Length: 531
Image (cartoon, rainbow, N blue to C red; front, side):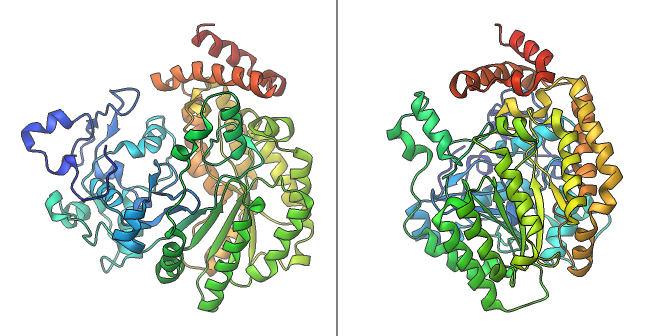
């Protein structure tokens, strides 16, 4: 699929009906009866992978309300699970602030969703659904009642039969949805992510050069990429992007965004982080206090050294006057297992930083009304076996410091060998144990979230323990425990073996020294690799 943004027409909406079969390998239009009909795509490794082409299975508000902007590389995307697009100088000159959310490429993807077409960009969620796990997207009811009607006031009241409403109200002909049609435009972001760059002191196993300079150095060292090719992977942003972004933010973003996440790399080590914090503080100070809850999430590995930690904490008293700050330390395992997944992590420093923040809350003016914490857990094939003890540890911190810590939902789909579905069914027992433990303490540990949701209408329950089970672990436990696997996941076991052997050679990290419980799985993957 071309990513040329020079015009709004793409192959699928101009080809004659008699040539549909030729292009069926790319996408197939759904019948309006909402019958689940497989759409085949050669973009995926399995040509017969049943990605459902049906508005009920394709609808997702993220394409409209979830922009992600990389201020360093000029990459942009809507939703964290789709491929990045590059903003060019031409885009900035031609579209101005619309380059942030309304480039022709993004409008084309929205048109496809409205017509019930599955695009390969959404492969990550399609695979999760096929494996029986709950995907991040909210589905058709959330798209219709929550987004089109609730947020955009597109109808005077919510509807019960969303499928009938959808068929009656949404155009079925691509020609009725031209470029910049109101249904294709995105002008009400709810979640905004600002990526500051890729400078990072860690090289987490599932990460890449796009988010870690440590990964970048390793790949160059072992000849996987050449230094002169870095611009291809990480181009410089257009000179005017940052200016256009902040103009867009002042005019659009700050007025509707409910959640703003700051990502790196590792934000606390970047000079730009403090500049962005000053701009955000000024933007919301300028608006004045309103009865609208704006949540600022900072995703950090919390491997931060004391000097940087002091500087970070000293920001918080002023910042939390205008936004609700949610610190999201990236972690999903403990001690040596955490140090394997998040290579370069000093576990003792990490835990010490968490305990310092929790114990010094009053010193920095942090209260349950302006501050929250939630562990950003990227569940992956290396974290599942320690999930029960991680949940135990989190609950012990909550009890010790009398402050609730959320569990933030995320499952790694790619790289493919990190997907939990590569594991054998016996690993499902670890998920079930963690789920049962969460169920015991979920009500108690969701008190802060319930209080905030009661106070602020429409607030998303980020970090909810109840939601963690209902919307993630219930489905994941069932799918991992099942003996059914796609061929893609089975074949990924060979990738898993080659990856851990590479980690042993390059980093001196022996997976079985960290995960003795994975010995049988290691030997199975070794067989799949033909070794």
